[in-house]
Image: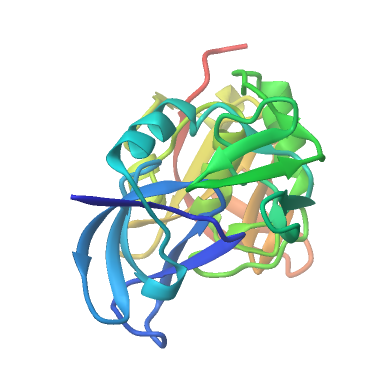
Length: 262
């Protein structure tokens, strides 16, 4: 078995081993993975954070030893960047890169960390140890407002609905699966929208009854979700109501509580 870690800000992950293939998710800096299959130009990986399998370009693959992979297993929920865009410096060669909100900084101490044989310095804001706090969760959710929708995206510069909820919960120390249909399988089911609290998840289905959308409840029957962009809309027992178009855009299926009751 081989292992790797993302040492780039964002790595596109695809459904097939081709540059033109659909982007199904992304790796952010500091996220590590197992290598499942290798081809000339692509490698198939399994993200350690959520178990999601995809293909990445071999040129963007950075191999690590199993010992480091195991070490990263202990760190990858411990520290995330909190700047919308932060600067990371590789002290070995003084090169810099930008990191998006939610990137992982495994084992960082006093702004310094080692990863894949290199030493890095990060001077921005971080969450050193995420705590389960619904107030903070909502604060972090609002930081992504107006981020453009991007299928398979997980950053403030392009994000999809389940990538959005996954990243917000990651910032608050809880793992969620990558896809909305899988996220809907965990947590406690609530009977009515009125039972929901800010930070709870609302799931929506299509005409075939398949869950295809998810968002985060806010106060006073509002929801924040990624649809065209990360936006705030009204929600009721029917679904999401767009006040601009005066119509429902998503049909409510279920409300789930991941956090304990506040």
